[in-house]
Every structure is written in structure tokens, then in C-alpha cells.
Image (tube, rainbow, N blue to C red):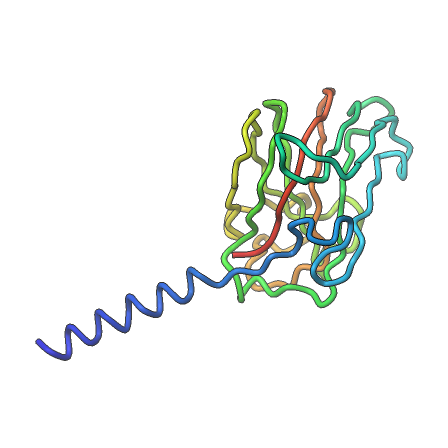
Length: 187
């Protein structure tokens, strides 16, 4: 009986330690720069001939500092996205964490988190987790096991790979994007 209690205690303690493993990538303590010292970059589908337009600024929404990304997303001319992205140096192993967490505020539209690895070399290759925003600050947890691949020529699963970039994307339909990101990291 005593060994069963010790086993349950060890199991509970290890689960608690594992679930508390967290890395803040950015919470705007140094706006524009992640905790790894990397700058955020904004770009549109214009890099491939698309016509989407937008911007990302450092702002404050409901007294919360954030990256505020707005724009007109259009699928015209084979386009369809705007995004802010951060390069991870060093890369992040999907075996060290369960997923990505982020705190967002938006306009009731669907957005996505995109991650790229060493095995997603072409611009159209990434892993994607979609979510819907609302007009309240919301923390979303995106398990690595639920990210979907974008292309047939990449590994099916993200788990087991190292993440090189992480991006917040508005795209793949015609709409007005308006989303704020106040914190992002790994859990």
C-alpha cells in the first residue's frame, strides 16, 4: 500500500512538473523583440504577387500592450495573407513542450498560427493551427499534435521536429483583418 501511494505521488509530481514547463517567447517587455532577441517581421502576400495590404504596430488595446495587425486580405491575384513572424534562434524542439500558447483579441474572424521547421523549405510549406477570435482577451493553447501540414511533401506530424519560425497569420479568404497579440510562447 505504501509503495502504491509513493508511486501515485511520483506520478502526480512528474505530471505537474511537465505541465508547468513554459517558455515565454514574447510578452512585449521589450516591444518588437522576442525573449530570444529576434525582431518580429510583417509581410504580405505581395512577396509572391498577391494584393493583400496591411500593417502591424505596437499598440495598447483595453490597457494591454500588443502587436496590432490590421489589413485587407484578398485572394485576388493568387494572394491571400498578411502575417507577423519571428525567427527562433535557437530553434524550439517540439519534444520539450506540448504546444504554443498565445493571448489574442480580435474581430470574431478566424486566424492561424503557422510554424516552419527545417523540413518546410518551400514558401507554401508550414504547419497550421486555426482559431477564432472574439472581442475579449483570450488565451489559446495550440497543441503541436493538432497542427495540420500545408503540403503533401512534408512530414505529416509536427511532433518530433524543431521549430524555426512562428507566425500569426490572417489569410486564405477575403476579409478585413484586425487582431492583437499580447503574449506568445510554449507550454
